[in-house]
Image 1 (cartoon, rainbow, N blue to C red):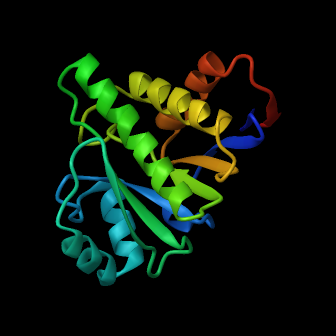
Image 2: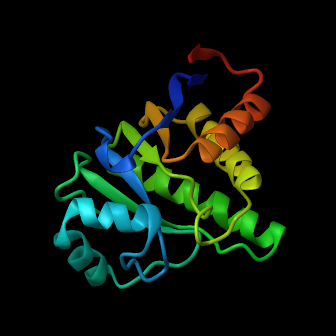
Length: 183
């Protein structure tokens, strides 16, 4: 599904983020930027050992922030490592999750990226409730796209139907006044 957000596109697709032909993909990273499970592990494996070396050189990243590395063996030029919160409480974690998305988008824009692909940050082993995380992600990205022109495409990529459906529902809820341009 595609949505028009200002002059830009927000897209929801099933698939593997490692295969996305975009300028940058986002890694749902831990604060040490080491290879983990889920999306993080898949990205590290697909990018090759150089990604772990680059992440080790960075030395870590606080929750709610992001760091950038080359994409190495991935189709994407860059990997943006966004550290979302572990689920503890609604208010503090929501601010940190929103910050992780904004930080990743800002880094992508600073590196002249026109397209970026996101996973559902913090919804795996970090335990963030899927429906709440989807709402925060969709709302934050849509607001960012409304007010900038560097990034023309933001694609959310989902490895399972449950996550895809949660984000699709959040998009219908938060983007009600937005034009749907593809299904």
